[in-house]
Amino acid sequence: MSGALIPTRQALPGISPTAWEHPADRVALQALRALPGFDEVVKKLVGYLGERGIRLLFQANAVRVGPNQFARLDSVYDEVLRSLDCPVRPELFVSQAPFVNAGAYGMDRPFIVLHSATLDLLDDEQVGFVLGHELGHVLSGHALYHTLLVIVLNVGLGALPAVAELARLPLRLTLLEWYRKSELSCDRAGLLAIQNPPASLRSLLKLAGGGRGEELNLEAFLEQAREYEEGTGLADRVFKILNTAGESHPFHTLRAAELDAWIRSGEYEQILGGRYRRRSDEDDRSSPSIVDDLGQARDYYVKEAKAVVSDVVGSAKEVVGSAREVMGNAKDAVRNLTDSIRKK
Image 1: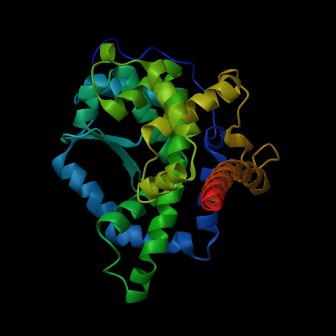
Image 2: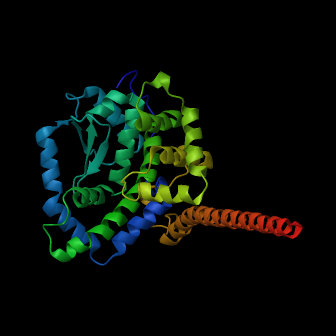
Image 3: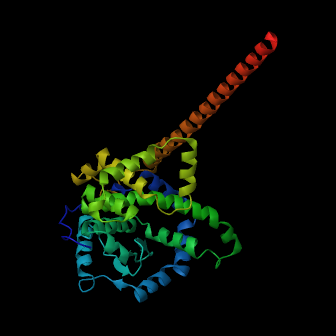
């Protein structure tokens, strides 16, 4: 961390997580929660295998941030908590690790872990973006399911009956698909925490490629992101699906493109202007319904599906065109051969 501490930002009193959540994230999470007994099973599983052990691990082998420990980071965290009007202060730990990462874990008392390499790579505002992102996970209730995902990916379900292990692959893929969408939500929370679009997007640029700030060009990175998004061809689409299916996070170029699109949509400015859902609105008609979420999520997936269909049709047309060209060339060859024989 270098440079000036994160500036004081506009507080967003009572802001509800639904203000920043991606509709596909909400639909996927509500679908999981709608399964009979799912939440109760998850809580028991995480409580038995996960939260206590993970918390004790970081208490034993990481440093808890406070006024007398990582004081600079503690000040940045305080400002992020104030911006998002967080009603609680989740514990924050710094863990010695050589790769850049962070995570939110737990169930009854979620906590955040920041890898030390993150502090070496990012400046104060960019660290604020990462902290706001993780705080978004906590406020949206993601930490419980993230803990489950960590258990499924790294521990497995061997401690449970064999039938549970049979469910591991579909559960793993479902959780990964949801978690990738939750990352898009929490990038928005990170932006709202520091209220600096260029710094937020540059955070994703640095997470993608590392490097010193003066060596990096944000516009070039966004152009790269647009090229990735607009890449055509059936093969490209297939590779994109295969490359991300086993990942817990979307690629950084995709995250940058999605966050940039959200900024350009005007929703970010509306929230800063005070037009956002509040926690006090959770039970009234201004809160988004599952029907609204389904509609928006459908539009999101339909857009992706249309791109795939378009590529399939385009590839089919290319095949048909090539076949016609081959047939035409074959006909010409036969005609020339026939003419040659006749002349003889």
